[in-house]
Length: 126
Image (cartoon, rainbow, N blue to C red; front, side):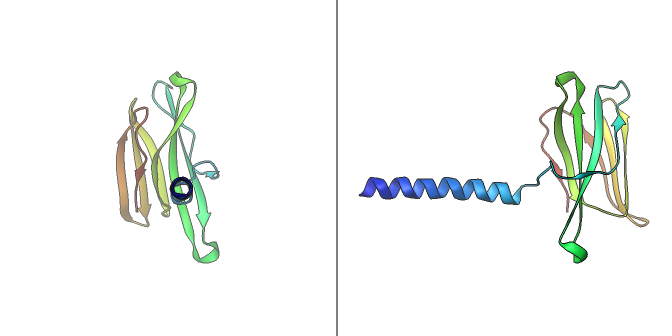
């Protein structure tokens, strides 16, 4: 009987962990194209930003930036995620660095210069 309880407990724990990460992690596959494509100087990378609304009329907008790695079979990787502001722009500084600006009116809420590397984690902002 103890073995059945342990297996049931393990099963519930695995399902709970999966559900937690599934429902709390940003879902980067359901947004609308916002700004892009913006191609790097040599054409090795392309940046696209996407947005997704949440919460109905009283909600807001989340924005994320995905990089397409053309030299790696067009692999994509989300490198930036944050709340949408009224002014958003991005441009390549050089082949491996992209500048992302996400501002509210005339106040600069966020200015990021992100080094683009394969496998880099999402740079989440609040």
